[in-house]
Length: 189
Image (cartoon, rainbow, N blue to C red; front, side, top):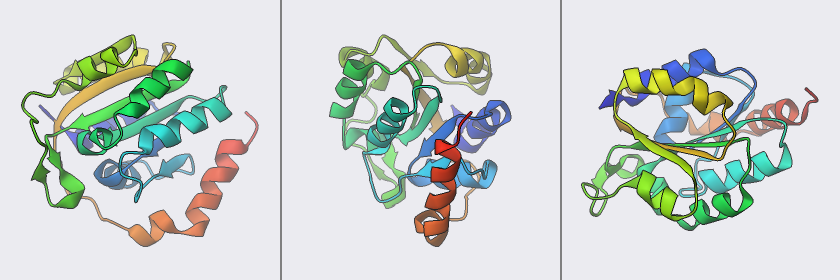
């Protein structure tokens, strides 16, 4: 398995003008690693990161949207996978950090975590480009296609927690944070 923060550092080194939609612990890690105006954080919307990302992808088909989700969060809204498959946005990437716990809520174990295959669930919902990545080397090798191939793309990333990140809820929920994202996202390219 790979550390989530190391995974996100690899992604941050390659991201240019993609919108990043992150939730809970992935959001805090991402903001520490890659603070930028095109970061959309959906804290408080457990299970809805992919839905928020889908709306953004459909609204701006010219801009790639990458969702950084958690396995516990995705379990809250598995139906979103079928909705993404039906809409089939070519600019949509869904990366799910799979660690088997509801990390944001005290690391309580997910029911049946050892048996859940998120890539198979996504495939069963109708997404064609799915897979699971277990190592940092494999993630580095997969990143070019993840960032350039037509979507929707779904990858389950088997991770463990990395270094703890500051949990700054005031920043995430701040009006200025939302305004910066809106301005950056709606700006012409």
